[in-house]
Image 1 (tube, rainbow, N blue to C red):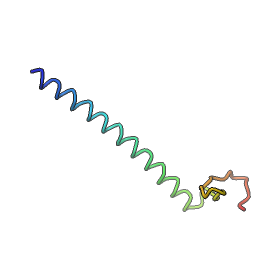
Image 2: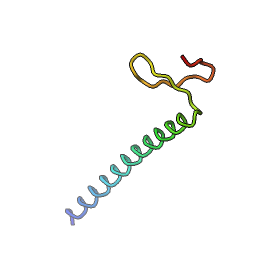
Image 3: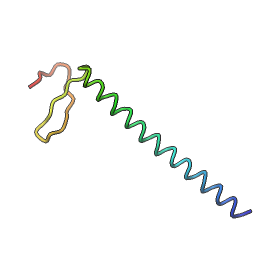
Image 4: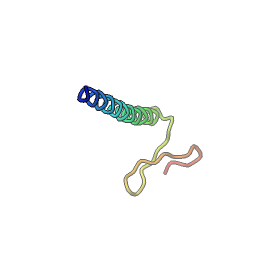
Length: 64
């Protein structure tokens, strides 16, 4: 009986951990896809800084 209880608890813990990690990964992926789509559709303006990073521009900033 003790082994079954330990096995059940471990199964629940790792199921919850996997679910939490999966939700976090999918949330980041969905946000990245949404921002990329907004950039492609020209709803967001971006520029590349000196380090090569993409920076979102404010609506009143001029494109260099």
